[in-house]
Amino acid sequence: MKQYSNAELLEKLAALKKERNAIILAHNYQLGEIQDAADFCGDSLELSLKAAKSDCSVLLFAGVRFMAETAKILSPDKTVLLPREAGCDMADMADGRALAEFKKLHPGALTVCYVNSTAAVKAECDWCVTSANAVDIVRSLPGDKEIIFVPDRNLGAYCGEQTGRKMILWDGYCPVHQRITPGVIKARKKEFPESELLMHPEAPKSVRDLADRLLSTGGILRYVRESREKSFIIATEIGILHRLRAENPDKVFISATEELVCPWMKVLRLEDLVNSLENMTIQIELPEELRKKAEAPIRRMLEFKK
Ligand code: 13P
Ligand code: SF4
Image (cartoon, rainbow, N blue to C red; front, side, top):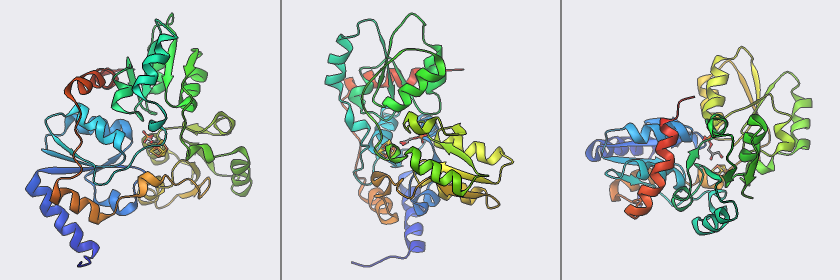
């Protein structure tokens, strides 16, 4: 099979995008070449908003399945493509049926899901949140209600710490962020004592307590852009370093550990984007009843004002 150069692939991609009336949305953890080829890069909240507002016919999602599913839930009339199968280990730690049973143990509780969840889990929930708005949304919920938080026990606990609300936590977590340990952080801080430590709230409490700021990936990018600091230790998936370095050439970024690699976020290459638009694969489809149920908590989130 003929090997194409990146320039040739980008040319093909541009032609296909025009032909299909498509846009490419990429998550901040994707490989640099994918982020650079995308029309828009962002965190989960920014990508959801973009998916909801875009007037194209085809949304090509360079990310993981729950992100493409969220786009399909919000834009059922569009064709949503996930170029290659890519899951999220945390999202796969909760399923809709088990959540329905769990809810029976806590009658009257409000159920909040992290956007890193399947459509079936979202369909069981009152609210959806992302790492960018979870604390504010939890704070806004009626004080007399218990709150079930699914699937991320770390983000859920963080919401509890910030709001004083009692959280009933599902026992899920992100295996990538779970690799950030106090030992790793202390060693990095010793090596780079002047650097500010920016961390994603999916990290466990033992290291959250050592962070200077806890932010979504979009929040990290915004914070660094506005900060006068010159050096940062970044405690989240390494894909974010691409944009951080491109947008802030005068600043220094050190990964908390080189082990922060999400294998699902690294499956895509430029060829996959081209193949996806050429063959219109993999199309995300959801039964309409499930889509509608899953849409309600996401819409509530998108309409939420602090
Ligand atoms: P963000 O919404 O902060 O980009 O996080 C998504 C994610 O999967 C983190 O692991
Ligand atoms: Fe899921 Fe963790 Fe990968 Fe984010 S980094 S997509 S939470 S497995």
